[in-house]
Picture (tube, rainbow, N blue to C red):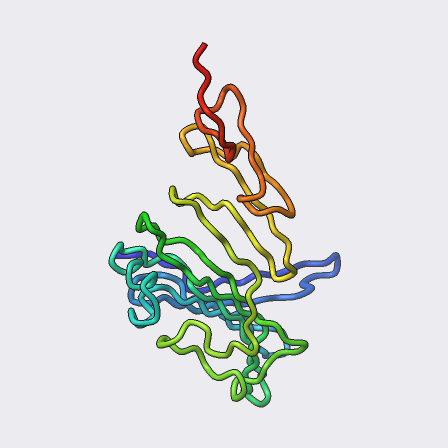
Length: 212
């Protein structure tokens, strides 16, 4: 059998006694992965964090999710949402959320291509944002915006990161394509080059071998 944590109780003490107390519970999906955690606030409100994995989605959502399932990569989080449930009205509001959009590389690796996050000035009522749907990755593009986008080379190494502010950072790999030998800001991999006499690749340079 499996021994799984189902609840916790945290007490914070001051010099005069108990200052605050937080109770929380954890639920698990059919794969024994934690998918719902609930923290109970002193006023009765609940903070509910939900995590969704590859098996929670329909395989038709993307080739990457289908491949994650095929490779039994079921413990990889795809989306995380934090909800506020009011004690008095039972209304639910989405407070935070993030989504990882995976892509399939030419070498058949599955990597994160984009990271989305919830962007809004205030929590969004459930009747507006609607509940999570396993038939779609980003259910409301008006509220979920791309925060980071990643590019990879033919070896599956992450060589470029672009933020939602347009900032670009790049990396050059060498030493049997395993280690980062240069990190560059504000330039794409095509704009930079680096190598040394110790490395075994040209690092973006183009030159002919010298034979004395």
